[in-house]
View 1 (cartoon, rainbow, N blue to C red):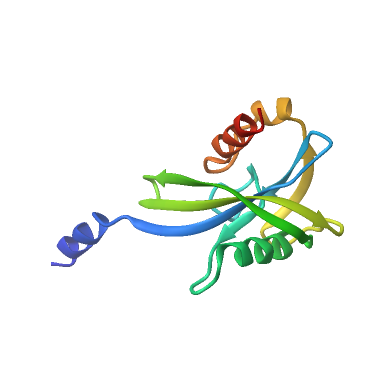
View 2 (cartoon, rainbow, N blue to C red):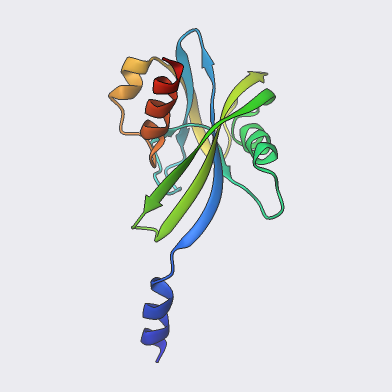
Length: 144
């Protein structure tokens, strides 16, 4: 019976709401390197994370940025919404993508082991976490 219940529950996809922020300065994009203990650990990604229950997406973006990097968002402008499907995690993520203007100095955190600025050419050669490469491709197409 337990196996049947588990099989039944596995048919349901988990839906999560998340945020990711694009910070660009002088043609370079700010990325963070995920802690190896996390899903997609050791990979570079945009700053961001999960939206908590009853939290507005913009507030979540500012909170995640501060928690992960120590940076404060001066402004957060919604660019687009991105959908991500991860069969390994049985997950459908709805991700709000923001263009951020920030202040402060970046620092490490438990989730983020390193942060750096990268050129588009450098990013295009990377194997980024989740579908963050697709998010940046869409951003660059929007800028044209």
